[in-house]
Image (cartoon, rainbow, N blue to C red):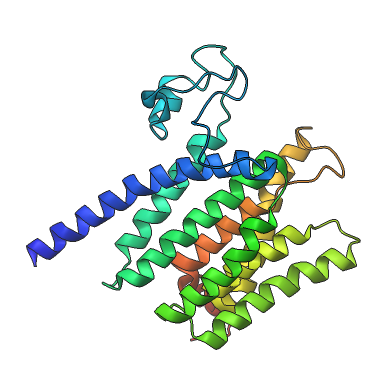
Length: 261
């Protein structure tokens, strides 16, 4: 029993480390993919002065802290989104490992899912674009991954993807395009992993998270009227909420509304 516990703790620690590394890669994807650039070449460099970054400048989170959020050469600011996405991805990887029940195929799919969401968030924060080359293949990949590993049944994976797409598509057409179709395509993968019920919950939570984040910024004048706001970060946070504590939230809601015991 002690050995199993130690092995589990090692897995969680490794998951955190790998999640930080993959979160760093997600930042590369988020910056380069909307620009049509390769995500593997050239090597990482400062987008302001063009200097190639040294290995010690690429350590997730720690390098940003050591550099105090600025390029070592030109002193251009390095956005907070870089360490935030790295840390969030590391935590998601670790939590998935902590809650894994020995099915490593499922765990691998969940890790791929967090990498996908981190990349989508990075794209949206960087350019307000969710490229089709990222979202459409992911919808297929996570439908297959969810169904093959039993994360959801094939029917629930398909229904979740459909519900996620239709929710945003309906809002897009009703509002005359104020919500982009990129979010609908992002929801194909999210819905396939969560299923229809949790997909609806995730969208409601994402809307709540968005209001809670945008309202203070609006009151402070940081967000102007009609200014577009990236919605992928809130969808990703809501998807993680549902994946890890969705059942607990549903039970709480049922008790508060009298729908459950």
